[in-house]
Length: 147
Length: 147
DNA sequence: TCCTATATTGGACTCAGTCCAAGTCAAGAC
DNA sequence: GTCTTGACTTGGACTGAGTCCAATATAGGA
Image 1 (cartoon, chains in turn purple, cyan, blue, brown):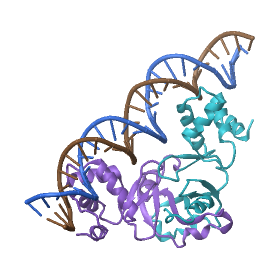
Image 2 (cartoon, chains in turn red, cyan, green, purple; image 1 turned 45 degrees about the vertical axis):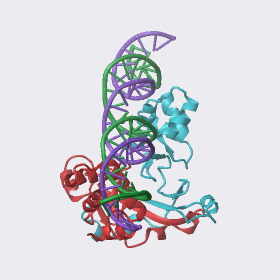
Image 3 (tube, chains in turn brown, cyan, green, orange; image 1 turned 90 degrees about the horizontal axis):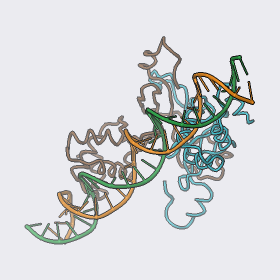
Image 4 (cartoon, helix red, strand yellow; image 1 turned 60 degrees about the vertical axis):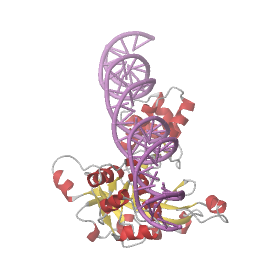
C-alpha cells in the first residue's frame, strides 16, 4: 500500500477499489492531470469507475491537503499530488507544459505590510509563463513569440 | 470620450454603442468583474446588448492589452481594466473580495536560472490568499478559520 | 456472516464560454 | 445627406467542466 493510501486509511477512509485506482493514477510526483485525464487513466485500471467518483475523490484529497488544485490556464483545474513540498509552477504558453519550480524567496515577503489592507494573508501562488525549449525551437524563425 | 475609447478608435475600432457601454462599465481602476457581471451592468445602459458581444469585446480588449484576464478562484474569469500598472492580486478566501497589490520585488527574480529548464520566461502572476478584515471579524469567535 | 454508514453510479442539470448564420450599422466615399 | 460595405451584433444552439441526487453497492466493524 502506498504512503498516500496508508495516510488515508489512518484518517478513516474506506479503501474502495475506486480510491485505490485514483491514488495509483496520481502516483508520481510531477503529474498535473485534469479530472478528466485522471478519469481516463482510472478507467484503464477499473473500467466501471464513474466521473462523479473521480470528482468526489479529488475534492476530498484536496480538502485533506494530499493534493493541490492548480489552474494555469484559467479554464481547467488540474490536480498536483506534489502537495508536501512548497513549489510553484512554470507553464509553457505554447504547448501548456507545466513544470514544478522552487523559488529562492517566499513570495509572501514581496507583499509589504502597507499592501495587505488588514488581510490575514496566509498563502501565495505564483505562476510563471514562458516558452519551453521545444516551442522556442519550433517558432525560432517564423512569426513573433506568443503571449 | 474616455482615453480607452480614444485608443481603440486610433486602432481602427468601430465605436459601436455596445463597445462604448462595455468601456463605460469597465471604467474605474479597481473593478474585477466577470463577463456576466459586465453583461448585467451593460444591460442597464443598453438593454438589448447580448452576451456574445460582451464576450467578443472583452476578448478583444484582452488581446489588445487594454484589459487583463484574472482567475482567482479556478472557476470564473474576471476582467481587470487596470492593465497599465504592474500589480498582483490579494483575494479573501472568505468572501472572494479582490484587491490590487503592488509588490516590492519583481516575482521573476525569485525564480533562479536552475529552475527555468531552458524556458524563455516572460511573465509571472502572483495571487495572495487570506482573510479580509470583515471576514476575520465575522469568524473571530466561532469555528476555525477556513482555507 | 450481518449490518449499516459510507461510497459509487449514471444521468440530469448548471454555468461559463464558444460558435455561427443572419441581420444591422459605423464611418468612409461620393 | 445618402450610399455602400465590411465589420459588428444578435440569439440561439452547442460544448465542456463540474455539481447534484436518488438509487444501489460495499468496506469493514460488530
